[in-house]
Image 1 (cartoon, helix red, strand yellow):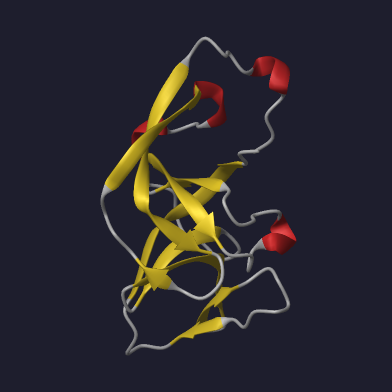
Image 2 (image 1 turned 180 degrees about the vertical axis):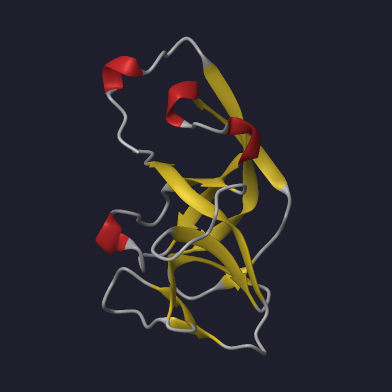
Length: 140
């Protein structure tokens, strides 16, 4: 989705829950479902605020697409997790952010950094896709 900055109405703001856990952009990490705080952002940056939440990134496995350590990612839990989308997923109880690969009967979670390995998903594994990454904010 391309957003023209001149189209963003800064007077309309939305409040997104920021969850306590830091989503791993490296090796998967444990998840907590507790709201730590709220993030207030211009409403035009989040098309579906009612189904969107924020998580802080920990690690650099997604640096190839510009998602780096300490970024806040906006995750839409109602968006369809289809092949090629960047998702927040829980694999066997461990949370991670990766690109979803679903082709030829295979499911994998792919990093965007050659220093990291894909995570192949096998039928005996527990996979929960929490949502699709729709944007990010980088604090300085």
